[in-house]
Image (tube, rainbow, N blue to C red; front, side, top):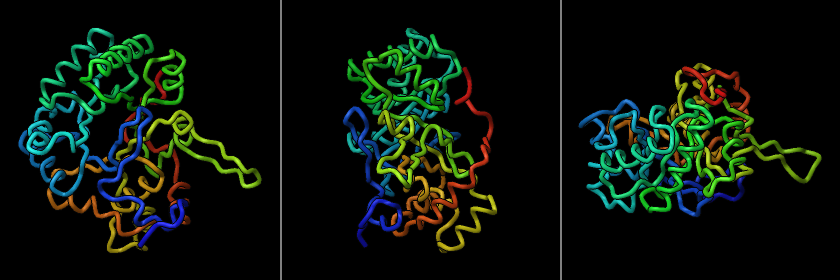
Length: 296
């Protein structure tokens, strides 16, 4: 069961639960991370512990999730160096001094000694504060308390704004809402020209920015129909596999042990190129709540 080519048709062995992607700063980011949004207290500690037992090696938190402490408790029961911990800067903490204080608070909360990946959670506070926050994050990298930095919910114009500022460190990750119903072609899509020997790459691919996504929309009848071909795999498996075959880092979320284990059961099958394309074609700009990628 070995992968022979990279078109998505025979890559069952290409990814494992501990597979990684190389970031632009040279560090390695696990392909699957547990998302802990809306997980609190013991529920969060248990979820992270179960995920680590199941083979996950990355956990994604945020200051506004109020569970950095719980993530740290679970991770500290393992060898920290084997677990990739991410957290995020929330909107009220933008600006140079506020960001420095927010980083210190997250470090105290998680109690892990350092943070593997620190993201600007959204672009909402505006250009001046976004860029000031980035400078503070760069300083934290220089101090060794953060290893990699990136962004979340950034559109192409936000990313271009950051690159135009000529930062010392380029963003390594953009975590953004993507699923078959909102594919964000301008950010992530690779368009292959059939009559040319070259292809047009997406903005993030061009600048070596890894895309990180949370799969959702698991109840849509169109997804259920495609998933029928892959039984006993579920629609959630279908979405996670689609994310992996698109080259994304994926953030399945659950607080139940059985579901956490089940969500990682995606390495013994692959989607056909036709079904990957069928999922890609479902795009209708269906935003779950609101879209921060379009704010000024």
